[in-house]
Image 1 (cartoon, protein in one colour):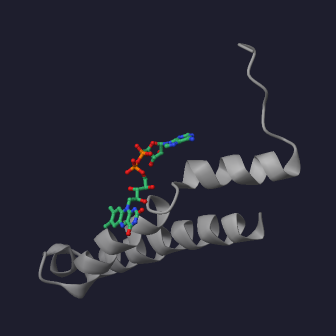
Image 2 (tube, rainbow, N blue to C red):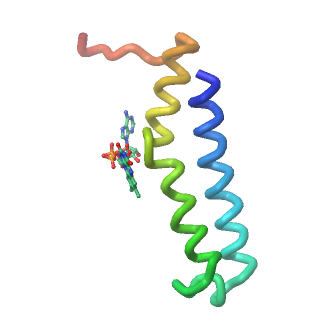
Length: 73
Ligand SMILES: Cc1cc2nc3c(=O)[nH]c(=O)nc-3n(C[C@H](O)[C@H](O)[C@H](O)COP(=O)(O)OP(=O)(O)OC[C@H]3O[C@@H](n4cnc5c(N)ncnc54)[C@H](O)[C@@H]3O)c2cc1C
């Protein structure tokens, strides 16, 4: 559960930080050649690869016993 929490938080944080960097650098940061654009794209993988954020939320809520039950059996 703690590992899923850490992965979820790290993914969200990376998105926030690289988005802020891109905004700071403006058009220069947007260019494909810039390290900012590279970091912006690369950081998105953290919330997708190895289980998406939604999967982490599912694992955490299961471990906490708060996962809503399906009404369809
Ligand atoms: C650059 C890169 C490198 C990779 N390297 C490896 C590797 O070395 N080894 C390896 O095994 N795999 C690797 N992968 C695959 C990676 O692990 C999968 O992309 C990842 O698990 C997500 O699966 P998916 O792409 O099929 O997306 P999907 O499972 O189709 O998910 C797409 C979206 O659907 C939603 N979603 C998915 N499941 C749920 C759910 N249960 N509840 C709610 N919403 C949900 C989420 O919003 C998610 O972002 C790599 C992928 C990339 C892009």
